[in-house]
Picture 1: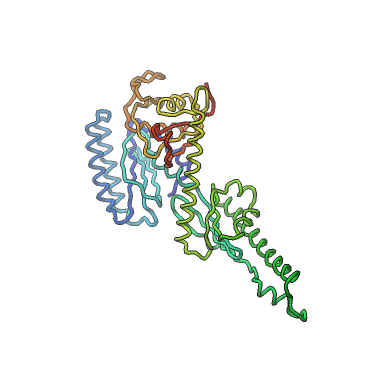
Picture 2: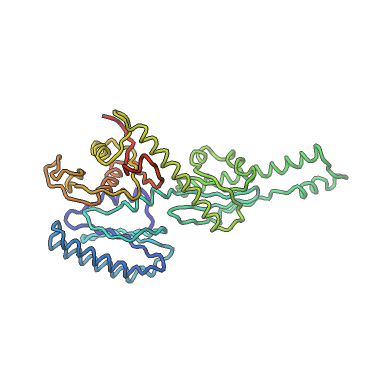
Length: 390
């Protein structure tokens, strides 16, 4: 099944200190051989956990059995999965098993930890809003959804209105009138008649888009149209609810091939996302002075996170850092080995950045994975917009 942000937060909150969770991301995009890749990852992961003194013999035994179950599943189930490029699987020896099929491919990986490794999922959800894409001209409109790189048309929402052309209007207006309509006021009447039909058509497109948008729980709207007055006129007819969610526009005709429309829609969505990322980073940097609502770098952001100050966590898509996490109360640190809250031992993790992402989600903070280049932000790799200052 697909995953949304609410499901992701529930997944990120799951923990099992007795039997570790296996998080598997398996790219099954042809011509890859996912079964061979899975076998190699299992072999390497087992070798690592057998050398890790954090795991007991009993835990290792159960992990081995669980990995055998995952291999058996892969051998029988992967061939039946259609329209999928990535399988994300989270499981433990106590029967926890969550599986998601994604139309976007990421590098395969396997992680064993006390909780699910969800950062790749948060990156995907952050990178791909649920876009409603409407491509219209003065006569037709097609509606698509764009989510996680999957572009799906909804032909039952196809809109085609009987907008007349100038010749047909002139013929209809002169038929039975005993003459022809020539220039001046006659031509203006024809033009107004056609424009009236076009506006009614675009109003119909707007109304159907609003109903479809709400029904499918989209987050953003992208409009496509020819290089004429269509898009400005369509935007004029949009309900304020849709105007507030309009992300981007591109030049196209409804008759263009779906593959071409998909490419243009993805390009428009990515440009919108990059612009938003840069605006957020500029704000964080501008407000990163003393007693202001911006922080840059691991230590300042980590401190703000532990104090519940973070409103938006901004993190480079490839950013990594290591540190320590308390298994009892999830206190995070880059250097402390004894938890300052409960006094227990902190556990080393090479995925401290991912723990920070999960902690931000647990606090209902927004997480923005940054793909855009930014000269000032890039050396830090992580920053935050704060709810309040102390």
